[in-house]
Every structure is written in C-alpha cells, then in structure tokens.
Length: 201
Image (cartoon, rainbow, N blue to C red; front, side, top):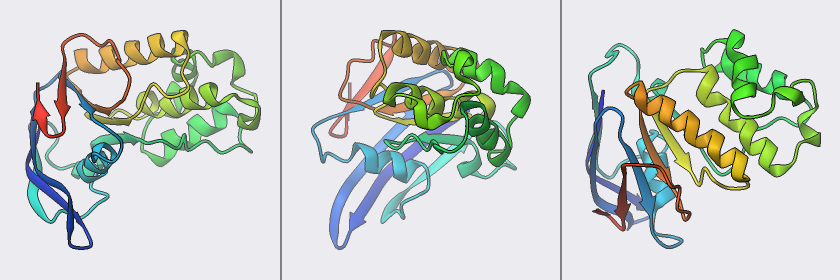
C-alpha cells in the first residue's frame, strides 16, 4: 500500500495555509513532519485524514482494499487523548474497538502493549496525562488501519512510554503500514524520513 499526496493546498479564508505539498510513502515507511509552530504540521495531518477541504491537489492510495473508503484506512491521533474519564481504561479501549470496527477481544493485549494492563479496571479520571496518552494509543492496536497519522505522539510519555510507542510503530511498519508523525521531538526511529517546511530530507 502506497500513500500519495500531490500538490496539496489548504486555504483558510483566502490565505494559503499549505501550498503545493507532495509526498509519497511506500509500505513500511515513516515520515516526520517538523518545523516551527504554525508551519502547518497539524493542518497537513488533518488534510491527509480528510478532515479539511482541499483547495487543490489530491490524495490517493495504491494497493490494499480498494473497497474500503480512504478515511476508514487510517488512524489520526491528535493532541487530545480522546479518553472518557467516566469509563475505565478497558471500557475506553472497548468503545474504540467497537466504534472503529475493530476487535474488542484485542483490548487486554492492547492495554498490555501500552503498559496499562494493571490499570484496566481503573477509571480513566485517575490516570496521569502520560497514562491517558498511552490509553489513547490503544486505538492503534484494537482497530487495524494501514496509515497512522500521529500529532506530537511523544507528548507526556516517559521513557517507558516512548519505548512502547516505538515498538507499536515498528510492528506496524513491519506489517507494511505507513506512519506520518508531526513532531518537535527527536523520535529516534530508524530510517525516518523528514519533511521540513515542505522539503523532504
């Protein structure tokens, strides 16, 4: 499966927020979007996710299940963790599995993968910011998607959390998935391409 974006342009009012952005990701590739605040990193992720109208350009995928809509072949993990405080950690993950058409039977292994197996029955309101971030990442496990769009994925994660995120990403890449991550941090992922202000390096 290849992710291809050609000459993407996003406007707010009549002002271009993104102009002429192009990228291609092959199976197993990861791309880091870097640049100063306001450079358009989050905007590009939202455009790739189909949440913003394009003023120009196109997004397409080649290979995989052509019958499944593009927006159902990706995960977007944004700044908000999306956690419901009134639900337990397990209940949050079960909700995402069912809502996203995933596998609720995968919830225990997903919680273990992010280091929250011990907190499965704990109300999410009692989790720390880093733990809520980990809980949000269980969406990546309980519902298989080809493309992961991650906005500042390292936010609030400690050393163990970063290692677990890396393990999830590597498993996804080994299975042929692709990742686009907007970040100000050095993620330390191997063979990580970078795009800075529209320039791939």
